[in-house]
Length: 448
Image (cartoon, rainbow, N blue to C red):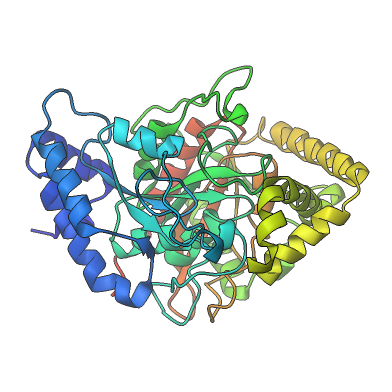
């Protein structure tokens, strides 16, 4: 029999609900995997095996209906507040900080019978200054960021699923670098209440898992309106998902977009993308190359204006008393935000609306956009977490995006394939992504 830690979300839940597997036995297998892998990977900011096993045993003994996440441990990025559990934000400012209340997503997980497995390493406040985590496929390379520990934990089999956040590329990029699925739902699909803010107009909650179906299931359990997060309360239809989401009912029509940042993509990543497109076309997909208008050449500069301005609002109180304990990259961004003319912000927001309008119109003709999730394999060294250039446009537009493993580069590190959908069209996106996942047929296995 395969070790329990190798079970994905849906398989584990089936075994837990049927009684073939106890929550305690499942968590014990994960704890053993953490003990074996984490000394070299460093994915966890906080993990207490005794607490986890105690919580799991309590789940096993509980009477009554079993929730949608019964017995499932989920790792949380360490900017997500957890009552009674340290939440350090990747910053010395919050060393030893233990919240008295949990974020909405943590409360939701527990209400559905799931378990907070532990806290995974984040870059400082989910920005650029890296934490201790190493890429599980090669310890001399970055795992990506800012959700570094969440991606690495799922890749190693230390967690069946993990939550992260994305302001530019902080779910999609580390998922691609670590060879797992990373799903960033539509803006406003999942509440951010209780999660340290960076940019109120850009922050998203995302899910890491080992397949599209698993990621979609966990996300579906967490979606819904929350009056504490105005982004989740919108007019019109809300994001709802059928779970498991299944495959697209026909071969999809795909817009292949290389984006204005294509010059940054490495030759191996370009070659992998081209081979993926050919394979999808051979299996029936209608793939059309699409070039974005020249206005999109400014998209990266545009999102940085918005993010810097928003960051000043998010860090206002903290900057006043702890600026000297912030990293140089964060201070530089805040300084940029302080110097930003509000008229430039207004202009940037108008440009963003133009991008959204154009991309929404494009997706009236296509089922999804396909592109690369990162420049290539995870870069060597741990001083930075890579470039978000291939993620930030879709984040800026609030569109749902998902990356799936698509092969390996010349250094043996994972490469990914990104699928992007229409805002609040998450169901269709997941169906197309599942079709692409099955068609590409890439299985990464477990490092180490």
